Each structure stands twice: as C-alpha cells, then as structure tokens.
Image 1 (tube, helix red, strand yellow):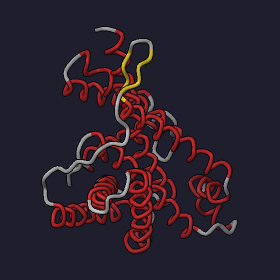
Image 2 (cartoon, helix red, strand yellow):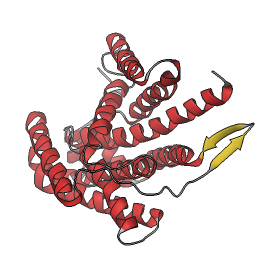
Image 3 (cartoon, rainbow, N blue to C red):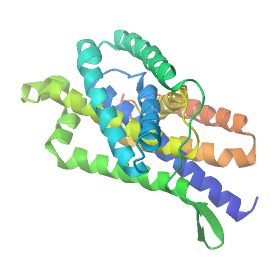
Image 4 (spheres, rainbow, N blue to C red):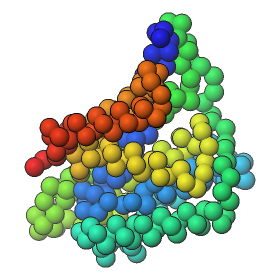
Length: 286
C-alpha cells in the first residue's frame, strides 16, 4: 500500500464521515428536542437528492441553486411532518417509531410512483483532481469534507450564539424547566425538524452528485446515522461528530486492508466494543 492510496482512503473516510455526521446531527436534534427517533429521516435524505436531480435536469438550474431549493423544501416538509405527525406523539417513543415506519413506506412509494425504481444521476459541479505532494485528491470527495464540516461548525455557532439555539440546548437538558422559563416548545420543535431535514437533504444531494439516486438509498443513511448517534451518545451533538468521524474513517481505511464487507463488520464490531465499556456512548450521560 503506497502513501497515495492511504491518503485517498483517509479522504474517503472523512467524506463518509461528513455525510454520516450530517445525517446523525438531524437525528440528534429531533431526538434531543422531541424525544423521538425519526426513522423516516433516511427518506428525507433520499427525497433531497431527488429534488436536486429534478431541479437540475428538468428546470435546468445549476447545482448550487438546486441544492438551496431542495434544502428549503425538505426543511418545509420537516415542519409539516412535525406539525401533523410527530407533535401529537412527542415523547411517545414507540408510537412515534410506528408513525415513522408508516412514513417510510408512504414516502418511498410516492417517489417510486413519480420517478420509478431505476437509479438516476446528475453531474457533480466539482470535477477534476487536486494534486498535493504528488497525491491526487478528487474535488468531489473534498467538497463533501468541506461542506460537511463547514455545516457542522455553522450548527455549533447557531446553537451557541442564537436564542433559538440556546433554547434548543435548554430543552434538551431540561424540558420542563425550559417550559417554565417561557420557551415555546412547539416553535423549537419545528425549528429542530426544519434543521434536521435540511441537513439530511444536503447530505443526500452531495451523495447523489457522486454516486446515484434511488428510492432505497435512505436505508443505508439511516443505518449509519443511528449507529453514529448510539456510538456518540444519544442526544449529544459533539458525540455525533466524534462517532461519525470514527465510523467514517473505519469505512474509508479498512477496505484497502480487507474487503468492503469485512470493513463493515469491523465498524460495527468497534461500536459494540466501545459500548461494552461505555454503554452511554462516547459523550452520553448516565
């Protein structure tokens, strides 16, 4: 294994980590604010990618404008889902899970009826390679790293420096105490769903530009997102970042040392080992 292959694998790991973190942060926001796991989050990720596909191919708009439109539409869909489906079930973990499974079936079948089951693709705006010290790094992979970690930094600033972000933090720590302080739980829940779905849509659009778009692509994203939040600690935003980095780097580096399937087993094996010693996750609390 030469240094070029190793560095490319590390970049692949960071790009995977960027996607996993964006998906996991959306799940974490909804979990910490509404006390539910939104299992249809993968379908939001998938529809966000389809949104960019149709906006770029049918309307002829450029990728960045399509990304903004798709992100806002998915954020708006998140508000609708929060108001109609999840607000009445807030705090009811099992019933919300059943509602989420129903949404998975509904959203997948809606996409299948509109787009069919064949994979679709659209061009990434990031082409070519960047050469550093003789190592070629693809711009599309590098763009995911920059987008992903840039959005993570923006989310941390939003939570730490805005009233809405501080309200989210207060609700995640003590819902009843936050309500007694006059924080509008319903408004913050809508904001959390908007942000969570917007992040998922961005992740789906970035992945769709590199690979392809299909109605079942959300299942893999959901699986990785749940693995990340369990590893990092349920409801912990820093934990989601750390967990995403660990799983992403394992997924990026291990395939060059073994097969892709064994690399997946190693990733989940590492999660099991960590949880045996720290059941609450890396940044979780007892």
